[in-house]
Image (cartoon, rainbow, N blue to C red; front, side, top):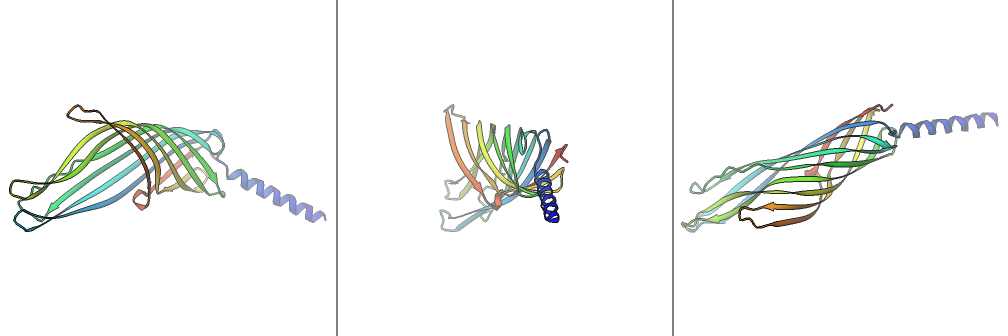
Length: 231
């Protein structure tokens, strides 16, 4: 009987220790960063005015960077500031020598604002995260158009426009701690809302509201975080 009581006491102490180790305590500092990259190809096929075939290919590459800094105001709950920067560049090729080959402008998005992140630790090393961020957004948006000249030859035209406003985004992810102070993260997108004003050359005000559930491998980002003071 005595041995049974000692065994239960030892088991309870072990479970309590594991539970304590699976908590990121209040007062812990946080510095995290993540990066992602994906490519996209757009093909256009048409027929010219003289009946010959025309095709073009646009290739885009997008680089994503997220940085966050903050601290834990309660166990497993961090508050701080977040910066997100996305840049997209591309190249254009055409099968028609009479068609212009424009350079593709660089598109970019900048988001900065406060964030709150909650951690649900499933074990001592593995857990789930949810980040809620909101703040200022600035976009340099690029759009593509196909038009025909007086000879019926098609050409691609790219235009840019500036958009500014605010955003809110909810981003789930997973985290793994190989050591207590270092966390490795992964996420595959977010649920976001943005309200942006478009700056047009014709002085016409335009407001865009968008709700985007962007989840998938094209949104895959890997990152790492350092947790100051965590034991």
